[in-house]
Image 1 (cartoon, rainbow, N blue to C red):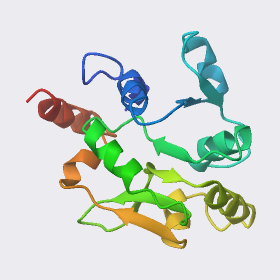
Image 2: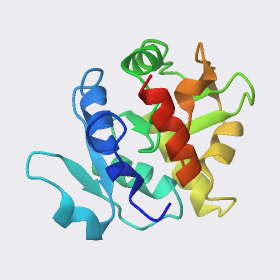
Image 3: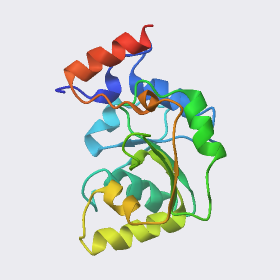
Image 4: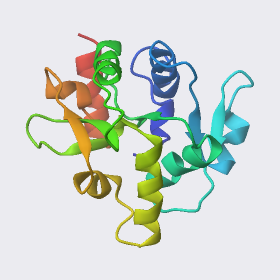
Length: 178
């Protein structure tokens, strides 16, 4: 997209701040996952975990959080989910299954786990580390597809909409501004 998707505004503030505030309603503690060069952008009130760069892809941030707090379960959200709402997060939290590797949203259409709209359990993250060390793939979705995961489905798939291009950003703006 050419810009940090977390800094795009949909709800009158940068998306990352909007999500941070929303997650604060359903979690005891909230962290941003950032790259080392993003530290200068962070305000002193926000908590964050710097990626350790031990793994490839989106699992890098998730596993960096796990290494910082290995006994914590992690509610993980991508920053480019402009239509996600507090109700959807509350459903995710309420339907969490501690006996599974993760509890993840999936669209009704694809039935595939959304690793960046999920709650990862500590044991699942340990399994993900083993998975990454075997170099099978750096794709968190592939890991979840091959793991014992609880899938939950939204009332409307649109709440899981992911804006990755300028056209998708413009579309999301039309939905947010309704």
